[in-house]
Amino acid sequence: MARSRQNVKDHNVVNMRRGFQPGIAFFLTLIIFLYLVILAWNLFTKKHISIYEVNTSEISDDSPLYAYVLRKEQIVNSDDEGFVNYFIPEGYRVGEGDVVYTLDYDDTLSDMLGTLKNDAKGGAEVSSVREQIETFYNTYSLSSHSQLADFHFRMNSLLLEQSRSNLYKDMKKMLKTNGQDLSYKKYKAPRSGVVSYYTDGYENVSESGVNKDVLDKSGTVERKQVAANGKIVVDEPAYKLVTSNDWSLIAMLDDNYYAALKDLDTVRITINKDGTSFNASIKHYMKDNKHFVKLSTSRFMERYINDRFLRIEFALRSAKGLKIPNSSILTKNYFEIPKDFCVSSDGKMTVIKQSTDEEGNTSVENIDLTSSYSENEFYYIRDNRLNKGDVILAGGGGTFKLDKTKSVEGVYNVNEGFCRFKPVEVMYHNKEYSIVSDTTKDGLNVFDHIVVDPKELNDDDFID
Image (cartoon, rainbow, N blue to C red; front, side, top):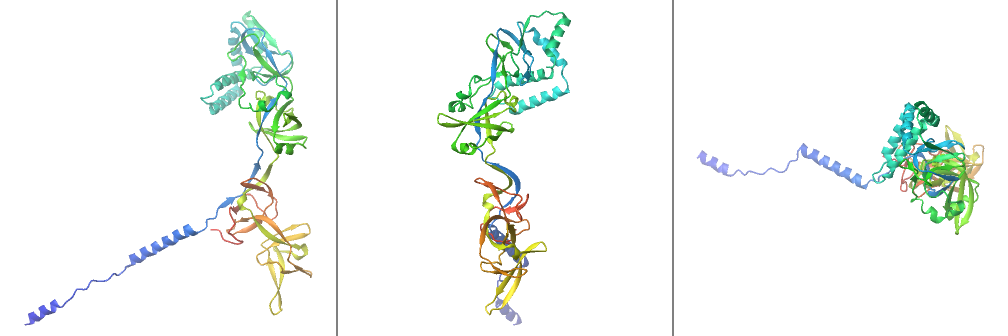
C-alpha cells in the first residue's frame, strides 16, 4: 500500500526548464561590446583636427624663362690636317701668343704627352678624377651615348689641367733629351681670351639676330666637340676663344614680367642650372611687337662658357618668413582703445570693464585680455567678455565706450592644447601657402603648431 502511494507521488512530479541566468562573463562581454560601439561612434562622428608645424621657408612664384647667352666669341679654324694635342684646359684663360695646340702627322706626340701628364699626377688629381667619375655615373643615361664622348674629353681636360703649367716646355725638353726630331706645328692664340672646345652653330648670331624663333629652339641646340677623335682637317674648328668677360642673357618677356622690370636698372638673376645668383643691368627693346630684355654682367662667364641657353628666374615675386597654409588663416575683430585705458599687469594686458545692472547698480571687472597689440597711439584688444558698447575705465579716471573695430588676420595656435588666436602679417601668398612675418608681436614662432582648418573652432576649444 505504501509502495503504491509512492508511485503515485512520483508520477505527480513535473520537471521545469530553468530560465536564462546571465553570468559575470556575459556582463563583461556586453560592457566590452558597448565600449567598442561607443569608440566606433566617436571615431566616425568626431571632427578630426589637422595640425601644421610652422617652419621658416621661402615662396617664389617667378616663372622660369629661357634666355639666350650672348658672348664675344671667335672660332679658330685649323689651317692643316693632322693629330691634335691641346695644352690649355677647357675654360682657362690664354694670353696672346700662348701655345694652344700642336699638330703632328703620325700621332707620335700623343704618347709623349701622356707620359708627361702621368708624371704630374698627384693626390689632388685623383680626387678630381673621382668627382668626375661619380658625376658621370650619377647622370649617365643609356639613351645619351654622346655623354661618353663628353666624359672622355672632360677627363683629358682634367689631366691637362693638372699638368699644364710647363707642359709645352717639358715636351720640347724631352724631345731634346731623347734626341728626337719630330715634325709638328705649334699654334698660338691670336689674342687673349678663354678657351672652349665646343661649338654649337650660334657663334655668329648677334643681338639683333635673337628673336622668338631662336628662343623657341632652346631645347634643341646641339653642342659639337672639336677634334672629337683626336684628328683635325683643314678649315675645321680647332677651338673657340671667348674674348671678353662681358656677356649677356637675352629673354622675351610677357606683359607681367615687362611691367615688373620696366622701371628697374638692375635685377637679381638666378641660374636654375646650378643656383648661382648675381645682379645684371637691364636693357629693354621691342622686336616683332614683343618685349625683349638684355641682362648684362661681367661675372661667371667661364662657368657657362659652353651653354647657349640658360633657364633663369628673377627674385621679383618672393618672400621669406614663416610658411603657413592659407586655410589656417581666419579673421577676428579687435576693439580700438586709447593706450591710457589698457594697463600691463603681471605680464598681461588688462582693462577695467564697467557694468550696470537693471537696478542701476554699477560694478567693475578686471579683464585679462585674450589678445592685444599696440599700433601708433592705440591698443587693439580682443576678449570674449568684451562686446560693442561696453564701457572701459581708465586707471586715472575717464571712460571709453567700445565701438570702433579692426579686422585682424590670424591663426589658432594649439601649443598648449587649446585654441589661442595669434595675429599674423601676410607678406606674400600663392594658391596654397602664405609667408607671414616672424616679428609680429604676440605672433607665431618657428615650430609652433596651428590648426589647418579652424572654421568651426572657437577660442579656448581643446584639441585632443
